[in-house]
Amino acid sequence: MDITVFLGAPGSGKGTQAKKLAETGNFQHFSTGDMLRAAIHAGSEVGLKAKEFINRGELVPDGVMIELIANALSKLPSSTRAILDGFPRTVPQANALDKSPGTAVTRAIFFEVPNSLLIDRLTGRRICEKCGQPYHVKFLPSSAGEKCERCGGKLIQRPDDNENVVRRRLEVFAEQNDQLLHYYDGSKKLRRINADAAVDKLQSQLLGLLK
Ligand code: AP5
Image 1: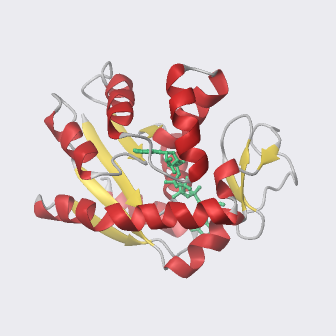
Image 2: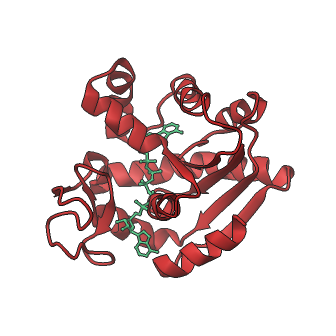
Image 3: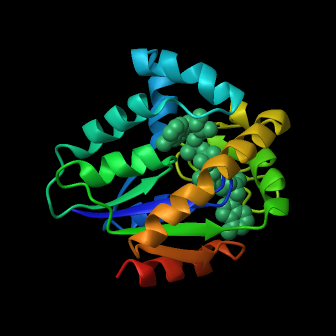
């Protein structure tokens, strides 16, 4: 399997880019945040465990996350090109991926964005209730107004996108990020992109890195 992990702060644009790459038909997108929100919606055991952590802006425990992603990747054909968006978030998660048979990471791409942009990006984000497509009230509004331009679903604000929780999420990210960058830099798998750029420009750069 060819596995690319997207690293970057909450709001750095990982989900926006991963969804566009998946639309090309050449990549499979795995967002652990989307998986957890689906589990919460379904009322499953994982969802019940995860909800309180997410709503406080904390990380869900490593054991839960490692099992979740291992299950998602376990039955894929070896020709799969997978984009992991939001996993790993800690060095134990990165280690678990590299040590499991067939899931060693090929490359890690770090989305660099100045901190000053992130609060606006996150508090102004709206997502489609049905398909999860992200929009932004100022930067990327839906052409269908309050509805999703792809599926017509209602646009809502994520509960963890309120300013207090956003600030905590950014702190949690800062606590883990240096160690994770060091982990991938050490194995020469780290690439960085300046993610303070237009969505289409970033998409072309990513397609270049993923060739
Ligand atoms: P998750 O859903 O993964 O949230 P996150 O990492 O905090 O990332 P975001 O989805 O907030 O940001 P993004 O980088 O995808 O940005 P987006 O493209 O949407 O995780 C949620 C929670 O689940 C975590 O807090 C944690 O509790 C738990 N969790 C998940 N994975 C876990 C793990 N592995 N271990 C432990 N816990 C885990 O863009 C943001 C906004 O900016 C949007 O409005 C978008 O329209 C706009 N935008 C995007 N690109 C641009 C651009 N180029 N220019 C202008 N605006 C842009």
